[in-house]
Image 1 (cartoon, rainbow over the protein chains, first blue to last red):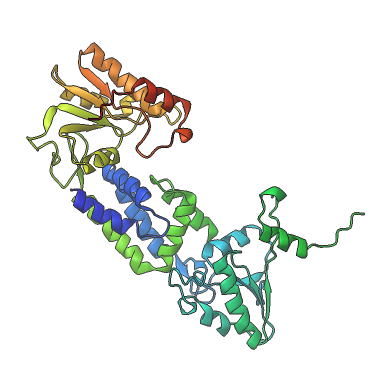
Image 2 (spheres, rainbow over the protein chains, first blue to last red):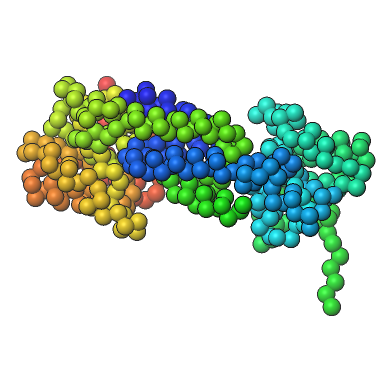
Length: 197
Length: 197
């Protein structure tokens, strides 16, 4: 029995976000509670039929070819916010302030994990741009995020497309003595004049 | 779309071992990769048909009423190792040294989480015992584990059934200066004579 159990755990733990430990707990709980297992199968089937990926920006959509953002004419098609994942775009959407569009790359360049530029939706992004486009690179402030931002910025520059990178600095609520050198350096270099009336 | 997505995430994140964050990553990945989603549905269906719970000890079994351990006559039915979860029993099995049987309670008494004695397989456990039985309480060395061990031990004492509790002390590889007071106290009080020839 252990052999069969370990086999199924090694399959389940390959899914995004699941570890060996969480897979074991999940599978044991589902075997102990088969109606729950049926429910989960049903929910996965609903996910399959209810959600699709937008053909233009790769955001989620409810069974339309284009997402709510791409068909919203009040949103500026010349401002494209480039993010690594759908969840990043969702987080920006939560604040309801951003009025441009998105391009979801589906990850960041990561040579350790063998994620190359051609594995990301980079060609698709540059098919959408023209001389009036501004690309806002809202990638993570990590090594992989920087590599990806540099890669995109290089291509954009040769095409004379304006690119901007979101600001680096102290996060809201951040304490100076918890910040690393690089954050402090960015925060100091990108200081803004402050006027209190 | 966000509403529908948040609804499905709140359902998926209720499963054992999944958080809101891991559910979001999993669901987004599956929507982006529908063949993978089909594969996961298929694997869950296999889990449903391939695994059952032993009627005697509640360990996993491959579609038999009794598990491999309960039908193994070389294993002493008078020694019952009481554990909280299937995974605890699996971990003990890995060392291939224990030659008794198990009783899986399906959790520990936890009044904060509203897990009461009657939610656990305690009646089922005491139906299996007789005057020759030894109950080895292999519950966690946590508050909940202690409460559950005390509860079981009290019932066992009234029935004049021998109960033992697994030893508390320094774990293998443990450094003294990382151990809390309670661990040190147990380790000192339960010291064993050492003889080197």
